Each structure stands twice: as C-alpha cells, then as structure tokens.
Length: 477
Image 1: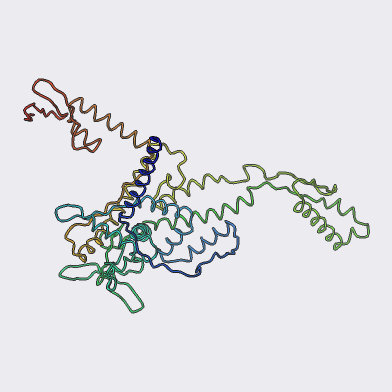
Image 2: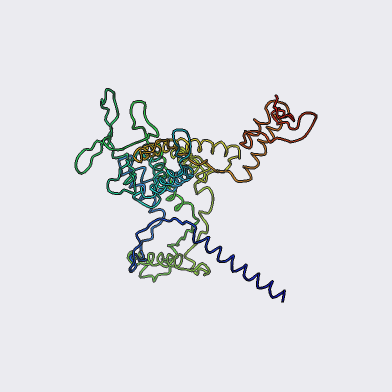
C-alpha cells in the first residue's frame, strides 16, 4: 500500500511539473517581425538555361578585345573586376577581409547605453537596402567595394514621409562615376559640390542628405586616381601574353611526326604511260598525301600504322625542350605586374611560392592596414546616418559604429600569442618594472590583479599592487 501511494505521488508531481512548465511557456513574451504573407500558387519556376561552350582561348581574346574597345576608366575596371580571375579574386578577398561585421552602440549624453534605441535602429535598418534583405550589412559591404573600384564611397539618406514605423525610406548608394564635381563658394567658403546628370537635367546632390568619403583623393580635388587603374595595363599585358604564348605552345610545345613521301618511288609505281603525264603525277602525289593524312588523323591511339615503302615517318621530331618556350619566365613577370596593379600581395592571389612565414606576416600587415583605412571611412558614413536617425527620433545622445576586429589568425596562434604576452608581463612584474595590476589589465583586461587573502600580523590581505588591508579595515600603501 505504501509503495502504491509513493508511485501515485510521483505521478502527481510529474503531472504538476508538466502543467507548471506549460503555464511558464504561455506567460513568456515572444516577439517576432510582421510579414505580409502571400497565399496562392507558386510564382517562381526552375528554368533550364542552354548556353554555348567556348574555349579559354576564345574567352581570353574576347576579354582583351572588349577591354581595348572600352575607353572609360571606370567601365574598364568594372570589366576586369567581373571577368579577370586575378582582379576578381583580389576584389573578393578585400571585401571579405573588410567586412567582418560591426556593432552599433547608442548612448545618452552621460555615456549610458540606450538598449531600446539600439533595438529600434536594428529593426529599422533591415529594410533600408533596396537591393536585398541584407539591410545595413549589404550597404556597408557594397560601400567598401565601391571605394576600392571607383575611389569614392557615396550614399544618400532618404527620409520616409509615409511610413510612421520607419525613419528612413532607404539608404541609397550612389555610383561616383556619374558625378561631376565643381568648386563653388557657398556660405562664404569654397566647397566641392557634386552634380549628377539625370533625365530631368543636372541635379545638385548637396540639396539632399548626401555624404561621401574619398579613398584616394588628390591634393586639390576629391577625384583622385582609381586605386585599380594600374591593373588595366597589367591585365591587358597578361591577356596579350597568354594569347601569344598559347599560339607558340600550340605550334612548338607539342611533339608531332613528320611524314615524308618519296616522290621518285611513287612515280615509279605508275604505269610508264602516266609517268611523264604531269596531271597524273600530281593526282598520285595528292592521293598519297591524303592517304597519309587519313592514317595520321583518323587512327585510334591503340592502332598501328601500315604504310608503303614510299612513305617515311620521322617520329617525335619536336619533342625536345629547345623547341618550346619557358612558360615560367613570362609567368613570373606577369604575376608581379598583376599583384602591383590590384594593390594586393601574393598571399591573397595564390602566388605565395617561396614566401616565408615572416614575409607572409608582413604581407598580411600591409593588407590589414589597407582594410582598416576603408573601414574607418565606411564607419564615418554610417555614423553620419546614425546621427540623422537620432535627430529625427528625438534622441539626445551619441551614435557609434565599430567594425569587428579583423580575424585571420587560428585559435592556436591566438593562444600562443596570449601565452607569450603573459610570460612577458610575468617577467616584467618579477623585475618590478610594472605592477601586478598593470600586468592584469594588459593581459586579461582586468581592472586589477586578484587579491590573495591571508593573515600575517596585523595584515589580513595584500593586493598585488602593494596595498595592505589591516584587520581594523584601514588600507595603507
């Protein structure tokens, strides 16, 4: 009877816990986004595309011709960035390094975080990108690419008039290639004013919420040289060299056989009445050459060749290094020009042969500093957007955007570096060069070292920085 009551009690407790958990789930507040959900039949389809297959030689020659037929620098850079493997790889690697994500921080005038404002900004910025659902992430990524290709990051902030739930209608990226800059005097000082030719005429973009950051500006003009302009000549030279070397390799780089027809023996096989007939002799020679060509071209690799004694075959007449070209020589020359043209280094373009680990670290240092300079410019633009957003929402405070650190080290490398840093500060503390509090702050980002509690005389605790805590509660240095 007691066992039965114990089992009944356990069943009751299990049921009670189940209903209690159910009530907790029902009381939990769940927030979600509102979507305009469509019902009905499918509107998309999986199509089948048919295209022509072209050889690499045709692609190379086509790109070279199109590049030389394009006169505008921006279009040339866009062309090689889209279709040349080296430039495309350099641009893609730069974008992935430049965009590591970012954090938005909104504080009041006293420096206190405004979590509600940050959440509101995060929800609104998802719809500011007209091209995709990437929101502000996609805008920042595209700004970095535009700065690399066309030297200027430029955006316009359009304030929403009809949507009470969203401060901005959108944040639009402007193609800087369409801009004409003029130096004008406004408000008593000279300013560079951007103009854009549109369907309705020439528009002064300074009348809108337009902001820009120049990547490589001249001394007296915001329009500097494109960073990838030298890559145009490098790609042109590379494509021309590839086309020329391909023809040489195809002509001299493959072994071939020479078939020789003995005309005297061939003529002696003709009837005596035809041996002095020029037309009969020519026809016989052409037929012999046609038969030899068929034997050479049409046979399978496993088949033998059967010929008459009036045909000689000189095998492998071209299978020697002297008849070919040294591909490595021109490849090394082209590689250097391409890497210099795209402002990148071999470690990102799969050209790291012979590089040591130290030289690879130096290359990454150069690349990361270039990336950080772009991140600082996109940071200024987004912070300008945030400042307008705060003003329109009546929030007194500060808007700050921080790119996440550029992370290209493995976890093992990070820990090894951290351990070496800690060993350094341990030695520095042992030699009394720094206090333990300084060592803790520089290695573990702590405000001070941990206090070791012990009792010795009238002292019950001593911090690593030398502060003594007496039993009476007084602290002395």
